[in-house]
Image 1 (cartoon, rainbow, N blue to C red):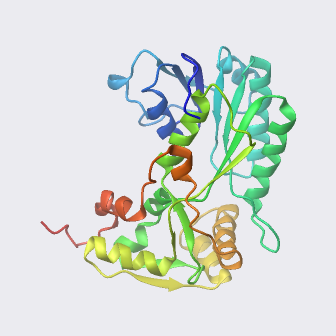
Image 2 (image 1 turned 180 degrees about the vertical axis):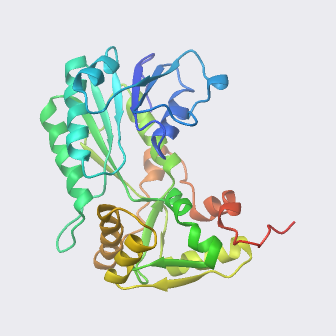
Image 3 (image 1 turned 90 degrees about the horizontal axis):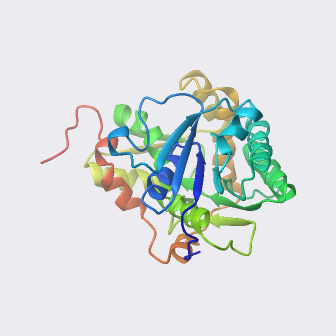
Length: 305
């Protein structure tokens, strides 16, 4: 994974998302051309216009149009495949694979999800498996990245921490493995630019430690200097809160509680695959929390000088 094959054209789907934006930033520093594929003009670009080198461009494309996708992929050597988790994910990503075939794309690196084995079940993981099967049948070079939970997901869950000093979930004391999305993007970048693919169709990406919600309260309390407590709900209570209070769509609320239950049924391990894949130590949760300390500070609790 360390050798690169010289200038290439790389297309990035999901280029404004958590991982896709990092792939854009990291690939933009390499000797290649990168094309971000957008559904609509964003409020801010992952590579701002004033800082954008000539090798970086963006294309507005209707993701429901295979013709438009094919046109956007013309001349592309490798593609990072990612859209946000959504019930239409299988149809959308399958359409992107077909468009890539038509345009002559050689390689696809897909952001996927970890395998889930019985007796647990996660519907969104099944969506990813279906897309992986499409890739396997496509005849293209491909590799699927299966990261565990992103540390950055905690930035989406700061409301109750900042407002009420609480973490709310239904995983009890179950340990969760976390990985920094910047490490995942670094692995994707290597695969997109490498002159040879790994001898596997899928890579599971894990971070250096497992952390329960209760342990997260202790870490956040230590970083911010304000006490954070954990409230553990039943699955039904958690689902109802996500629907009625957080006002999430049903499929997303279901996805969140399925992941919480999965952590209970199949405890996650601190296997740390990042170190071997990147030949360096992975980013840690403590470093992440210190980096984003202000995001977790409780209301009316200013950062100490």
